Amino acid sequence: MTTMPAKIIHRSIERDWRDVYEFAGKPENMPLWASGLASGLDPDGADWIADGALGRIRVSFVPANEFGVIDHTVTIESGLRVYNALRIVPNGDGCEVMFTLLRLPGMTDAQFSADAAHVEKDLAMLKALMER
View 1 (tube, rainbow, N blue to C red):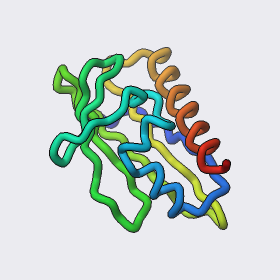
View 2 (cartoon, rainbow, N blue to C red):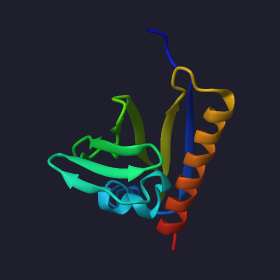
View 3 (cartoon, rainbow, N blue to C red):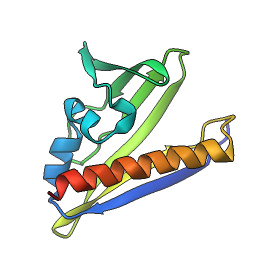
View 4 (cartoon, one colour):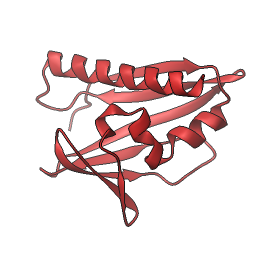
């Protein structure tokens, strides 16, 4: 298997990293800032279920931790599993929110750019919510 191209998208937030992690890491808060999950997430055992443009998806999160890691795997109905690395990192009195976007096999330049723009929009929304 070859390495997929990746883009790290980040946003500085003027709020303590622990506050951002606490808010952003709760699946029930994700529809407030992660537009791909705007329909909401419903608990299903240890995972969460959402309905959206890709159909029904299953989201599995890493356990809560002291490192600001909110990594999660999204499994779409076709069985494709997409690993999403999401990190909240202290930066002075604020923090950096970083999302690693992987370019999936077969994805066009336009699709990859659109995904990146989508993540940038979501992180901007998270920033707006956290800096109110």
